[in-house]
Length: 122
Image (cartoon, rainbow, N blue to C red; front, side, top):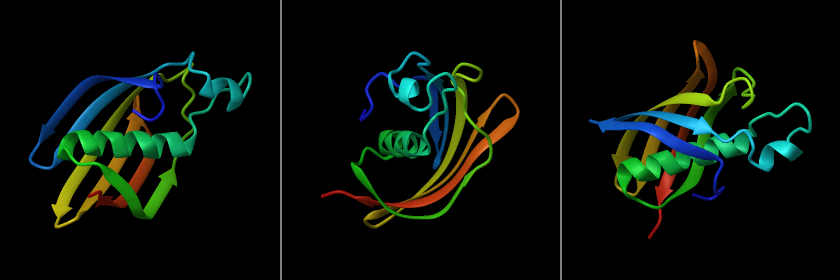
């Protein structure tokens, strides 16, 4: 985990190319004190890192973000108000690449949509 202590996995199910994951954000993590003081917001780059880490868990491979063809932040993730996120990752592996389509939600709110290609590291 690149950002130690930012989140914990509460539930993880991977079957036939689809991972359904529930994570709990640590609202006390120092990253939220700088982003932003008094109004914490989950940094987008941290969400992309979490998706990468969950994809690595599913594939058993070390990955590097090659290209993202679509990233849409649909709602602000405030860890004090919404500390539990549900992520769905549709994963396909093709030779040395892993393609991922992700949706991230909290409660009934769509927070993030992402399509990305990761390169498998040697």
